[in-house]
Image 1: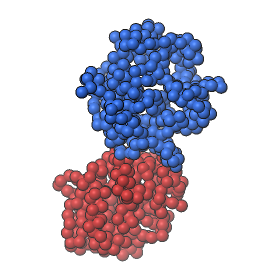
Image 2: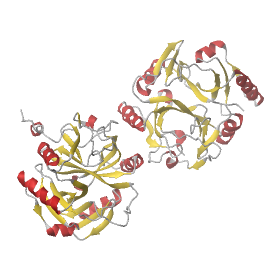
Image 3: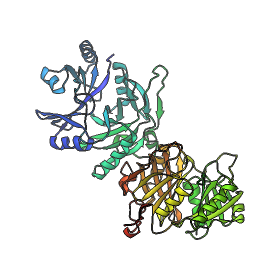
Image 4: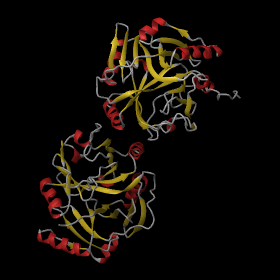
Length: 285
Length: 302
């Protein structure tokens, strides 16, 4: 069992590093920590970085999870190889690029690029965004799945994820007490489906709705409230077709032994209890 | 001694099309018909027997119903208003129609008709809405006033209301634990600007937003949060140029030790902390001509 402790960082390729940097700063409100070797590193919370844009193919997308020890990293690599996943051990240079002590990289059954990271670097200075979006931190990713049942089994049996709720076949998975850190959405491709940052209050969600709309950036879903996690949310378009989300008020699942996942319909009411309708391909039937 | 107001009680709105007004009140607001005849419909929103009266009349015929404690309070109000040259006129026939023990009416300097009532009736059976809009009750009334300074003086000096805050030239007035129950907005004409109903929470405000969003021009302000009161709100247009607002959350005030009133800048930014679009002329400063800007109370116009 691979024990994922937290979602750690996202790495995204882009053909326009300056444009992506401007978007991350001025729209998302992230803080640039470093520009080096064709990459830009962004801070959203106490960690040194949680998002990295690098010069490359926009289809090149990676999400990393933190694990506890080097021995666990070795064991995870062995287990993944036994299951037929090709595992790449990060070189010292690659680890330095990710600001971690050690990592392994593999692909999940859909083909999503996943990394397991040991000792990701914390920041000494606190996060101070380029705009006051109220961000409290990078919190979860939506991942594409070409077979939700198969991938749910991978994340819940090979790894330690638990199903918190399902919207149709799409499972929302937790690896700690937060309602979900991974969500799997059925589609026909591999990649990151959306990237979530938590914001402090639902006022921040609403304020960003007007901020983003006034700048001509498509809001693709919301403002709304998820009946699953109870989070108030806003989804909007980022560079290279990425979808970013702000949300606030995500539910905690403290009573792990008695919690029972629930089934919601795959349709607008399953995604929003206020009546917003998604303009996101993977959220539409 | 000011005459203490017990409660914001009801709003009377004249309408030329009683059927349309009734349909809106029932289907959009979820109000419950309490009693009706050919000319008048009284609707419930809470424990009060009614809080909105629709009358087949000129749409300019509007009134605000406020409860005072007893006959003595009514008498004291008559004297205090008389001292300002305002007549408080008793109307036993209207008292019977409104189902109250006593009623007397006057008009404020800013042109708003007010009915002071004694012992209005509550309903023992609970409110059952026509639609589940999540109403908790009549919360506040926003008034257009042609003389905000004089109206503010009347409400604070005769009836002891406290100024919650000022936003530009508009005054928000309260008398209980709510930030405000009345607000006065400078305008070229007098009357009811908006009737505000409390709803259970932000969910109901946002549900109303998504319900009305497909309707062109329906939403006039919000969804947003008022910086002064902290309320989440959505304002939408009703019949006869009256607006309706759903409000939730918001600051509670200790009436014994109210906070000092604050002055916010005029304009839409001070009306919404979320940055929502405002299409209400009275709130974005378009309603009152510069010459009509009221003098500050107690300060001669320079």
